[in-house]
Length: 79
Image (tube, rainbow, N blue to C red; front, side, top):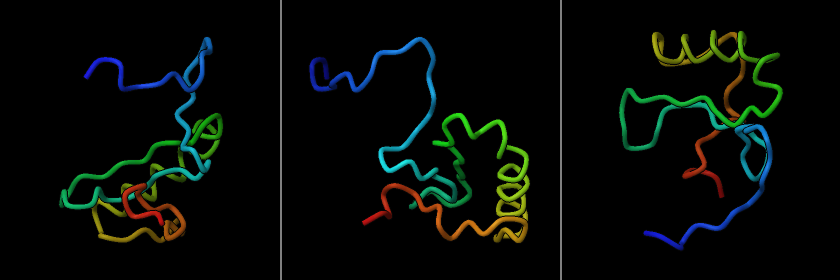
């Protein structure tokens, strides 16, 4: 669908960010067993190990104990 997207920013590097600056971490709604962890901006490198461990727990055990993921909901679930 050409022409429907708008350029939000032009820059030399790409930092995956959400509009509200809250990362998206969790199971994709309606897709059982599909998980995402994105939108960390420049903090992804610093926080990556803890988030990786938390998502691994989430995938393997159905919940994360190393990090409280309750504040990181998928964008489709945000109101």
